[in-house]
Amino acid sequence: MPGLRLVPVLHNVSSIQRLVDTAKLVYALGLRELVVTKAYGAAAQHGLAEVGRLAYKLDRGFFVLPDLRDAVELIRPDKVLIVSLEHARERLDPARPPTLEGVVMIVFNGGDPDFAAHEAALGEPVYIDGVDQRLGAPAEAALILYPIIRASSISGRPGEGSQG
Image (cartoon, rainbow, N blue to C red; front, side, top):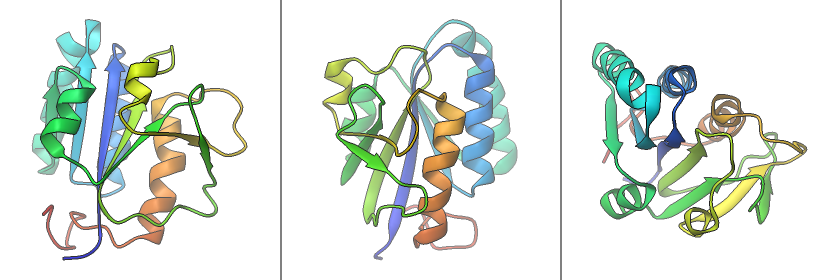
């Protein structure tokens, strides 16, 4: 079945609030799954359980993996976009979302420092056109995911196809 399966990933998160806000956004946009990699501190101790409960209530997928490389190896996406201001080679214009197909993993950084070079090398580093400083994962996810979802045929949204 042609179309797009977006797999949002939140990487390197220690903040419960950032984790929960990102999960609420991802699920509210109709996406069926969220992957979290390298959760630590309060997010690992309390936030993962809170998001797990939310995912269960909403009948959504929620996956926790130790590292970003594990997510890429397990999901084997057709494309990986790394949302990184420091490493960005391309700027995404929310008014003109990219045309994407297949399984596309979009990785948001849940921490304050940007991605390390070896993490950014796992995909195509991109950032939001017209934004000159990091906004944080929930805001970045809203500005990137919403336009893509509105412009695309997403498989795995409620009532639309399957996760494949």
